[in-house]
Length: 194
Image 1 (cartoon, rainbow, N blue to C red):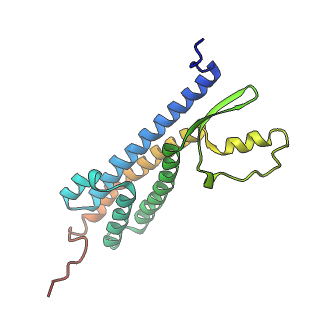
Image 2: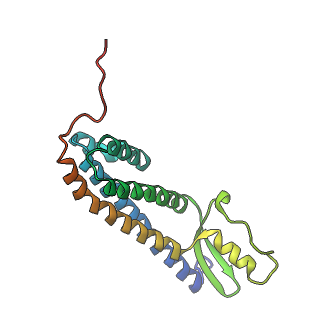
Image 3: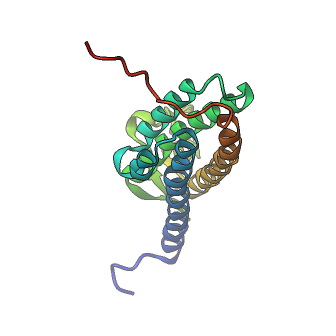
């Protein structure tokens, strides 16, 4: 076996991590591009804005725009729908933080005795402090495992992104119906210049 080959157990751990990362990043990309553009499209009467939204705004700015458009249309949108969309936008923000951690931090193999697992390291500022002295058998392994996003956690994030995407997509027709009650106007009041 060449020195560059990983042991079979390590290769399996890397493979699980690759699949989990791919699933999560694909689901998050779908959430970010398709859904957020659909929601803005339901709120905006400006096709140029919607068309160039992907190029002009990152996810944080899209959610800010959606919140501002929701404020503008607040009298036309039922309270329950407004709460659902705002709740979903809060979930998007939290999931975006996880996506940034997963996408921008180092993947690592963890070896404890005969066990090998893989994960993406959490930033130092977000790693938990040990709850037990690290000399107690198993406590170091438990603490070290809590310092990474495991493939199972990343797979759960992918499911969360998919569920959030479906939640938001379900609001688009309801939003469009609610806004038919109010004719499209300007998003912001333009004051005449003197």
